[in-house]
Every structure is written in C-alpha cells, then in structure tokens.
Amino acid sequence: MSRLNVYVMRVMFAVLITALLLAGCSGKNDNEHTTATTIVPPPQQQVLRAELRAGPQETPDTAEDPSKPLLLLNIPQTTIRDSEELVVNFVLGNAALKGDGGEYRIRYMVDDGDMQWIDRWQQLALAGWLPGNHILRVELIAPDGWPRATAIREITVEK
Image (cartoon, rainbow, N blue to C red; front, side, top):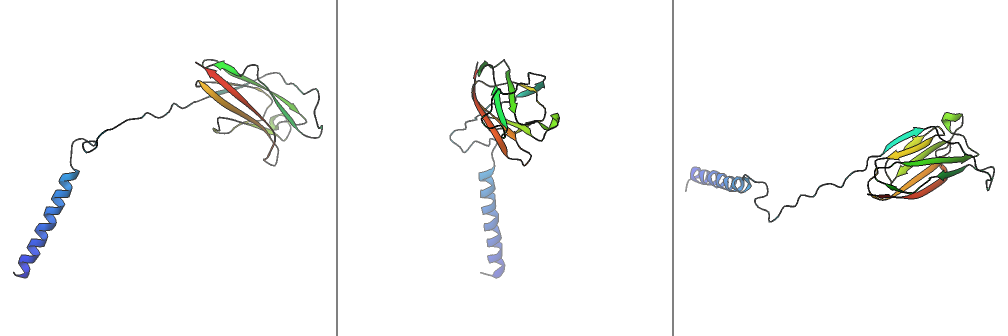
C-alpha cells in the first residue's frame, strides 16, 4: 500500500469514529438514555418581614452583676400561627444602643440565617413564618464586636 492510501484510510477511520460519537450524543430528549428522571422542587424559603416599632423600654429590676451588660427577651408567646407575627421586646440593663447614644448593638438571627442589626431600643415584629420549629437568637454586641449577652428562644409556628 502506498502512503497516500494509508493516509486516506486513517482520515476515513477518524471521520467514522467522529460520526459514531456524534450520533450517540444526538437526540431530541435529554433524558432519552436514562431510566428515570425525578424533578425535586427546592424547599420553600422563609422570608421574614421585620418591622421595628416603638415599644416598651423595660429595665431589669435586679441584675446579677451591675457592671456587666444584660439582655433579656420578653416574647409574649412562643407558639404562633403562620399568619401571625412574633413580637419581641428587649430588656436591656447596663448597656445603651448606638442609636440611643451608647456603643452596643443588637444582632438577631432566625434559624442560622442572615444576621440582622438593631441600633435603637425598639420592639421587633417578625412576620412571614413557615410552619415548623424555629430558633431565634438575639445577641447584645459590644463595641469590640463580641457578644456580651445572648438569648435564644425556640419558636413554634403552626399552620
């Protein structure tokens, strides 16, 4: 065989292999070579609406250590319906928030979600809950960025 014939045979072989590979990849349905396709929708995302409003500014009657800041939560009810809002009142002792002339801030998170900040002593109302059990974590953050007091509550939301 001549060199030209060997070269032509190699080119023809490469074209045949390419055609077979492309034919195996062509199809009208992406799932034509699978046995089953299950489409699973993503879980429903909870989007809470937070509203800050004027509320009672309570101070604790007694503190364990008058030199340490104190944070207490006053939540009238920890079991709510999914259409209701959760009202959170803060009780602060030995600390003032930035918006009130102090140096502290309040940080809160629901179910390890995004951190939200409160700089004024106001009542917090959270609405838009999904049914189930949720964790509300509220922290009093010092000027150095570290929490000085933490309060955690379990919230049950019924349908």
